[in-house]
Every structure is written in C-alpha cells, then in structure tokens.
Image 1: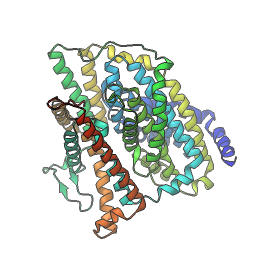
Image 2: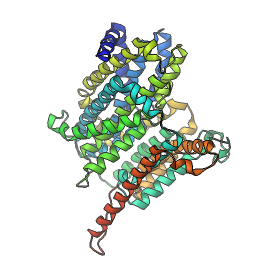
Image 3: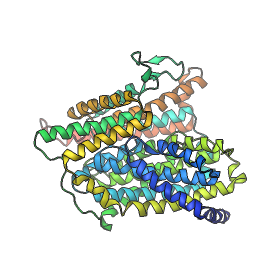
Length: 507
C-alpha cells in the first residue's frame, strides 16, 4: 500500500505540464535517434544532456526527459533492423535475425507491430519490477562478483551456437574471430598496445557500433548490388500496411518470456541490454524452435529479443538508482548527469529524494503508452521504405550509415574501418558464416576479459576462484546442461539423415 501511495505522488510529479511535455519530446526524439544506425540510446542521451542544462531543468525533469529518450531509442532501434537489416544499436542485432527475413517475405508491417508490442510488454514489465522490487533486486545483484560475471559470459557464449543455427565449427570460428577483434587496443591491465599496428586510432579498439554498421549495412549493400547484377530481386512486394490483431498473437508468449529473461539480465550491473537480447532470443529458440523456423522469419524471434532488450534497459535503472552503480552505458551517462546536479544515487535516494525516484517511475509508465501509441500508427510510414526502388534505397542506406558513424566521432578513420568491416561481412556471408557470433564476440569479449582479470587479481592468479562461488557454479552447471543438450540434439539430427545425404544448415 505504501508503494502505491508513493507511486500516486510520482504521477502528480510526472503529469505536470512541463514534465509531461518533456516525456513526450523524449519519446519522439528517442525513437528517431534509435532508428538511425550508429547513434543508439547512449549517444542519444549524451546529445540531449546539454539541452537539459541549457533549459535549466531540475533533476527530476532532466531525468524524466533523458529516461524517455532512453526508452524511445530502445523502441526505435528495431526499425532499421527490420526494414534494412541495419541494427540501430547493439541489442537490435538479434532483431535482424528474424525481423529482416519477415520484411523480405512482405511481412514488414507484422514484424514492426510485433516488435512494438513486445517492446511495450518488456518495458512495462521492467517498470513494474522497478516499482515493486527495486531495493530487493539491487541487494541480490551485489552478490555477483567478477568470477560470477565471467561465468555469466561463458554461459552467454555457450548460447551462440543456438542463436546462429549455423554450422557449429563455423560458429565457433566466427566467435573466436570476434574475440580476436575485441582484443585490439590497449591492454586494460598494463596499458600495452595490442595489435594496433602502430596506429593511435586503434588504441581504443574497434567501436562496436562501427563494426556492426559495417558488417550488416555495408555488406548488405554489397550483397544487394551483386543480386542486382545477377538480375534477382532481393525483397518481395509489401504486404499489408496495417497489421491485424491475429498477427500479434504469435509473439505474445515470447514477449512475456523474453521480458523475464531480459529483466534479470538488466539488473546485473554492467550486463546491459545486449546480453538481455541475446539470452532472451536464445531461450526462446531453445524452447520454441520445433520446426526449425527461427532465423527464417519467425515472429517469436522478433518478439523475444525486443522484449528482452527493453526489459533489460528498464532493469538497468535499478542498480543505478539503488546502488549508484550503472547497469549499462546509457545509465552511466545518466548517473554522471545526476552527480553533476548534486544528486547522489544510492540506497538513500528513495528516502532523501522520493520525488525524483517516483516521478521517474511514473513517467516511465506514461512513456511506454506514448511510445506504443506513437509507433503503431507509424508502421505504414516505415514499411513504405521498402517500396523505394533499389537504385534509391541503396544510396539511402549508405548515406544513413556514413552519417550515423561520422556523427559519433567525426573521424574519417572510423568510416574506413566501417568499410573494412563491410568487406569482411560480405566475405563471411559468401562463405555462409553467420555474422552474429562475430559481433557477440566483439561486444561481450571485453567485459569477459575484464571480469576474468579482476577475479584473478583478487586471488593473486589462482584460477580456482572461478569455481568457488555458488553463483558461478550454478552458471557453469547451466552451461554444461546447455552444451550437452546441443550435442545430443546435433547427434540426433545426424542420425536423422541417411548416410551420404547432404546435411544443409541455415544461417
């Protein structure tokens, strides 16, 4: 009852004309920013922080606006993923696996509607969790040490084979390639340059966003150009521009399951929405891929990661507000803004500044409904992108890719890196190697290495620390079960094929 009282007071704060207008603006701006490849929620929030200061907003209003941008960007990332196979940000990578095939089959409207509803379910689930369980979940999250996080990333990498659905050997090689690319830059412990070839531009390593846009967008342009030369049409005609309710039903169960998995991943400091999307998609595929439809345009493969990454983004607010520890890159930027406004997130925030916490939570409920109302009617506009002729669509994709990357660092070197990754992605696709393990290796490898180093630093190099925590042992047990199940299913799959019969795999 006390929680409802605080929430009612929060709605009084959120529904003031100023805060309501800021939430509406944040939702719209976040959706546009999220749909542009390369920007994503981190850059979107960072771009608008100066606006919060220039308008002299109080901490509550500033946090409401930036949180609406955060949620809006998570919604918007799915648009270019589905329409153009270009992830708007890192978590949206998983949406391309089934979202883009649906668009190619003339089901772009259905994919956008399913992803929009899944985003709403995931974000609402996270907001309810933030309302009811924030202090309790934050206390549970602090029991995760470096060794436990390392075990968590081991589990994440064990799911890669199930995600890509590709040849296991090719999947493993692709993941190793991503891990190798992730080691480029300065060693986090000694500061020694690794594999930089003497270039200062590589001291910070490869920006994951630059790699993602290159691997997906530029390689897609090259593939479509090749198809055009061969006289084939890569994308089918548009289907319905307005989806029916029956089109949304297949993804509802997957959305609920993805919300739970993503929310759990989100409350772990540093895990972020990327891990939430990966785990949600992998869990749903293991559970529901009875007819081998995932990766070929299955609606559940769109709903699960979208619900997962939006639930994780909401869950990431919990450690930021209750512990003062950012749960993701975006919440780290928001934390820095609050500190600059003399507001210190942590255990006493709920007691000393309840209007900030509960005003934010109430505004998130409003933002979710605004984003759903904003995105569903715009599906017809988004789907018309595919009606553009190829000679107009491909230059548009290239333009958006170059503008998105250049807007991050204003570096021409990053543009060259993007082109290089595009060529690499084209080659890998021609070799039928999935790009997803490469990206996941690059995304998760650095955090995995950092947590391994921290654990070994604590134990003075004793590797037994990796197996001392009950949490890590449980995660390793889950990994073993997962791998054993995969081996068993692969063995059964081989037995199902007659000797000498070719065994085809789908990327």
